[in-house]
Image (cartoon, rainbow over the protein chains, first blue to last red):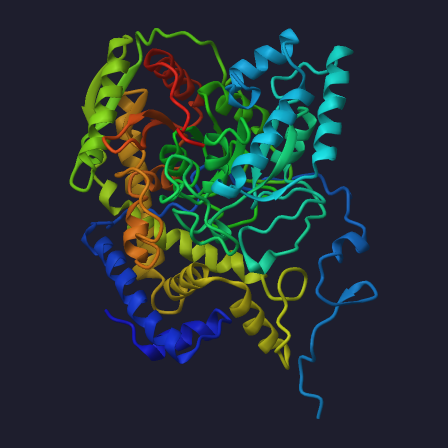
Length: 97
Length: 487
């Protein structure tokens, strides 16, 4: 099943990526090439087969509820593109008006 | 012989015997980096020479006082640039993380520091470990030390090239679908990926969390084993690490393989395998047989579905993991955004390169409403079938021998514009990641055109000792692998 330009635009919105018109066109054909590769899996009979999400069958690893080492705020914020005191600063979420 | 040319086992012995100091070794390595780095471009960051030499001298002093006993003490190591190093830039080969300086060490790195290893610098890689050639690095294309017109492989191409070129004796890489083994094969070095869960992923920048493992590279099997032994083991900071105790990976250097059952899977020798690679791998199997191993043919029937299942699982997990790059907490922030949603979109679009966007898009599509069962769930079921193929093979054999890659190193530019052909170069490496198995690549000769060929040794979960034993016996029997000529 082929994806069309509109599908690619929708996925780009979900992924928070912006593309130019030219990129969208190129991407649509590339995606179809790769999806054709994925279509090979249709040949495989997987009726009654359980999926694997983790290769080691280990689950629910707990630790004691004790405070451990913490990064001091200045170190945690050292890579922030913009900060205000001990917080990350971002543009307005809601319009100003 | 120059110090930078020594293998890990020669270095370990030389440091213990006092033939040379860590400071002298580090100087030789740094001089070598200065001389060949313009041609190889293996590093994104090399640490300050003075700092490295001071650290090396400190290990020499500790050794003199009898407090430097570990095998890695005083040994220079390079670290792939997706493994966090406190205070040392960690870019993942991406504009997104240009200038990012981690406030903490990855567990693998803190264990290296505790072992007295000297971290020399950070190696180049395909952006966010997505790629098989290092051409997806946002900064530079690392060259294959055997032929500057060819790729070193990827995504740990910088680590493999650095080790092959004598810029460092040991390096860490990461292997999500072959990213340690394939470049090791292309560059003629040893590259080992452990069982999923053997090594903590804490501080390894996430790509595909159910597949990612840190691996090791060296010019000899002993080095790859010793480095892995030093970083392996359960970590409270990564709940997916295995509780199994870590045995000795280095073991002894015995050459007798009597009692070892070897399987050669038919499907790895089908169409698309370069005849010159097949010949070298078959020769290696014969050498291993001559050491006493019993060789039989086995089958991994679902091998050919590995690529499709792998790229679906990896891209789906990547699309979720890379959602964290939003221009807020760290990483690139766009100057062109007017609101918060625009900040996300513009920062991501400017910060990520083409292959990373491609994978995020494919992964997002595969996980989106209406497609989950058809793609992601189906791939995870095929993953079960592949894992069962290996389980069945390991009922009758201890190790599998196969080519690491279907070809030797390809030319720069040959595949970078054709994603499907690039993906297919991983056909022999990805099944191991899907099944969570340990595997390594050891050099097994030069092809007709003079390029290294890799022999892949695959074992069942937590059986790294037999993997290293077979590889080490083979290495001894085959004799020293040459260094790349003309560097």
